[in-house]
Amino acid sequence: MAITMTSINETLFEKSQQLIPGGVNSPVRAFRSVGGTPVFFKKGLGSKLWDVDGKEYIDYINSWGPMIVGHAHPVVIKAVQEVAENSLSFGAPTGLELEMAELINKLVPSMEQVRLVSSGTEATMSAIRVARGFTGRSKLVKFEGCYHGHSDALLVKAGSGLLTFGEPDSAGVPAEVAAHTLTLEYNNTQALKDLFSKMGDEIACVIIEPVVGNMNLVVPHMEFLQTLRELCTKHGAVLIFDEVMTGFRVHLGGAQALYNIKPDMTTLGKVIGGGLPVGAFGGRKDIMSCLAPLGKVYQAGTLSGNPVAVTAGLKTLELIQAPDFHAKLTAQTKKLVDGLIEAAKEAGVIFNAQSVGGMFGLYFCEKCPASFHEVMQSNKEHFNKFFHSMLDSGIYLGPSAFEAGFVSAAHSDADIAFTIAAAKKAFALVATAH
Ligand SMILES: *Cc1c(COP(=O)(O)O)cnc(C)c1O
Image 1 (cartoon, rainbow, N blue to C red):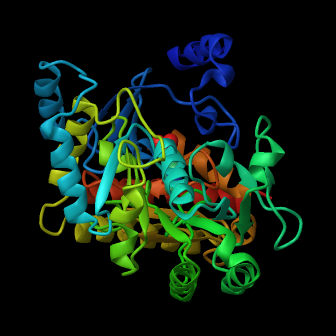
Image 2: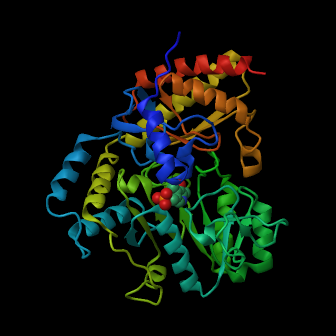
Image 3: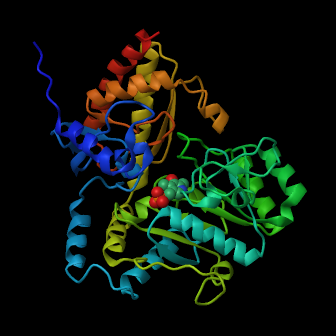
């Protein structure tokens, strides 16, 4: 007779749900989309994670991007320990912040001036306020399926018609706030042209993920990005590249370097903190000069530029400047994707995958999607079966069919081979499920 043992993991989740809404501090962690119990972790090293019950996993979330050099990298950990001994925070300027600003400006030259914050949400929220202050306009344009953090103005979905104003995508967001946000279809160049010809001169800014990593992975069409750049320039709208996810991940200089398009403003997060809370926004000097104390746009933060967090970021950015870092990361991610496509083909499962730099997308549909609508065609049941089989085998993927995946510099050939072997088993299971 089998004895059911309650794992530490299950106990923690049960207790957490009493005190923390849904048992988690960010919704996707709750496994609602794939079902089952979320994994509680206690340790990470390189490409590996260990849960509270001691089970080992190869990690393809990497804290949603930041752990690009792998978990607990000794260089990062040592520097953080050392700087922590000099106090955790001052609420006053430090030389570390200047170092970070210089490095950002060197790696992402379109960021002529930069200000540090503590999350990606803060970075995008502040960038939009500056853009509105600079232009004196209110309208904000975003794209369906892109995520820019959880501030009110950005939790907006498309209205019913192409050129209608947005509706709140969350309870608690006033319709009046959402009304200033317009949502267009990603990669739809004609919709962009139509919008700008109708109200281009009312648009304060357009915010976009230059490679989308928040509706699985969606790659931009060059013509779409180029048209966007031209229209913003022509109408005096501020073009904001939200590179919170793509920054330092798809290329050392971000997606703007990969595609050679210069935005007016850029937001950063994730990798820039190396696992501690850092975000940044910056761009053209004339725009950034509108910020207090120079200008009339207010923005502030008690822990902005925190020395410990900035140190983790600086060390991470130092490591990713190693020769061929991104070439290797890109090749390793491609190797994973190619292996998965091959394994699915062998099993006769409808599947596709692609990668940009160290980000990848897995799709249980025929072709790689170009818009939110196409992403939604992916077979969610198949993904969930695949996800749980992989999790059983010790492969930790994003717990939703609509999240991108991340590879770090610590992922070895053996990790990739192990993952593909596990995927063969998982695809075989998907193939029999009807
Ligand atoms: C993660 C993310 C954000 C939000 O960053 P937080 O640090 O979670 O607030 C904003 N934009 C993009 C593109 C992101 O991927």
